[in-house]
Length: 484
Image 1 (spheres, rainbow, N blue to C red):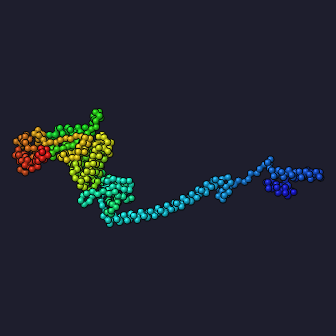
Image 2: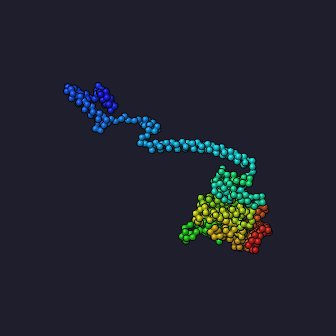
Image 3: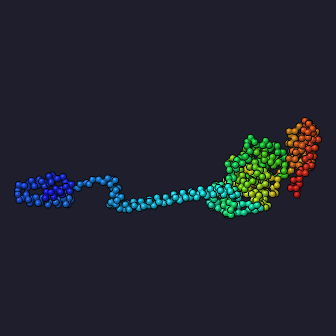
């Protein structure tokens, strides 16, 4: 019995005393002197002890030793989850998902490597095609989505052919714009293989900047040098200079200032000279553009030049754009040839820029346009409507008073003999323009130089006058265009 008690006490965590619990040892020692009563007491004590060890409700508990983190992870991984069965299932689900993602990533890497090899092969094949096969030059009419476009190419007879084609993936989308020049495949697909840079290396911006008249290069012509055009000078200054120098006058009245002015009249009547005087006196930036220069050698160059000029003019506002011989790009359409279509595109772009679609849509963007032509009857009506060219300034051939003023202005710097009568020359009825009057003075001076004389005589003026008057072009334009 002692061994059993000692074994039970050891299992419950008690420290034994010679194989017996201390309380039992003291009990046995106390009852050892009574004989029979000792056995009865011992049995009662043992029974009580067994009840205490089997139902320790009123006995203290021993705290088990703590489990280490590594042992807890090991047990959880091997299924000893206890109350964490849901977390265990979630862990296994995440592990399976991670394994699937790893497999998918490996497949994507293999596919990417294959696609890279295909791209390199396609690019090499494309280079070979571009080097060995002649490509067709066309221009973009419209962009349709990311991968298609409507293009147009010209055949040998000048007729246009439009195609709805695919755009190669290697084409720079930033260059792919309407009117852009592109290279098309010569095969029936006519796919767009490359977009040519119209503004390569900043050439378009540089070309627009070259049209800007620098401060040190402005003409020395003043308003006083434009003799005999007092009414024209007043109208141009009101329509061009006044909105730039005193815009508050128009704002006070509540009207938009004129956007454009058309100078029209026979050749040599002072249109370009007056524009030079405006460039000399105006404090705004001045751009001089020739109408013929806007018709480029390649498709799309003309509209691009118009956009660049107006963009630079808005950046440097206030500014004035003078387009000489505007009839070269603004004539009404008479045919459907390739050249006429390109001129039409230039005109459409010019109208769009004058309407202010790239600016604020109003005449207050600080840009004024002056156009000059000697053929106003050929201009497109869309250009002449109000809101684009609000002022039309006529330059007729000079009358007697104006011819006298022109003669005096042209001969002001010449060494004249006392017998020269400029009034009699101006009183003649020959219809001469201001440029032809200047030519008379030039011819008189050349005859004085030829005769090695220090002054110009009346005979020199007579010979010079006859030399200019007998030219077939003298007065011919006026007779054909303004008297018919």
